[in-house]
Image (cartoon, rainbow, N blue to C red; front, side, top):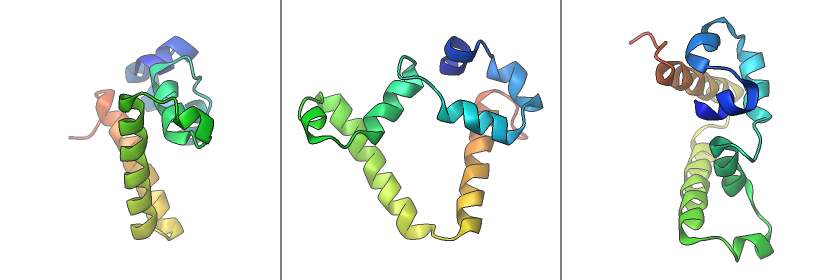
Amino acid sequence: MSSFQSQYGLRLSKEIHEMPWEEFRQMLIGIGHDTALGRIVAIRAEDRKEYLENFSPEQHRIRNAWMSKHAEFIRNHTSKEDMDAQLDAIKMGFLHMAGLGGD
């Protein structure tokens, strides 16, 4: 994931297998707006009307897709166990992208 490399100087494919989940989570939370991932997160999180009015069609598409998925997730996953399972699935997705998945 190039955002981690540009911000933290880490190649996830080499570092993630030794990194505790909480450390990875904190780095992900702290990813900057000047990275590709940070820009996507900023688009998804924006809720100020004056900013939304100036979004490009692509930015609106990204945000609307996220809002739809988020609403569906909230409807279907309300327990702590479900949330933990979803976080584990996200972790496995990152491991798989880094070529470290168990498949």
